[in-house]
Image (tube, rainbow, N blue to C red; front, side, top):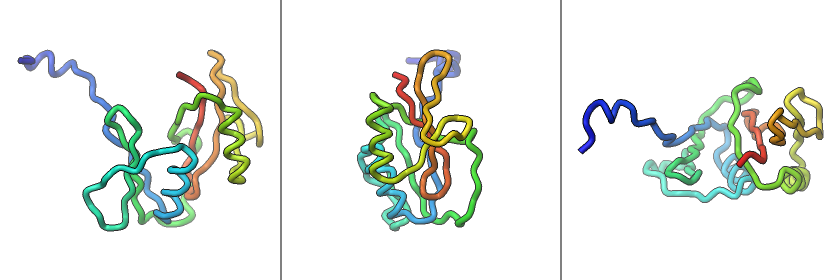
Length: 135
């Protein structure tokens, strides 16, 4: 049995990330197809939620109801890692999604000091996303 002191030092684990979206169907298609995410059951069944598995018991929850025209800062972003930035960029191009580096240069890849490649783009509601090849 774990004592109270040990329990206080156990790190929390990520359960889910919620993203407030304007059009659930559009955003479900965007996140599902672009990141190959698996839809998982959600308890509300009200047509205003889509839940995706992120592995390791974590999930991405899309919730419909956001107002249009919100402006988001690039520093506030979700990040997904992929095996190949180049293959992912081809997927973005096929879907006509613009991307760029951290500074905002279009069609550019940012390379961190540790060699990890990064790109940035926005979802249909303007939320910023980073994709990198960190493993």
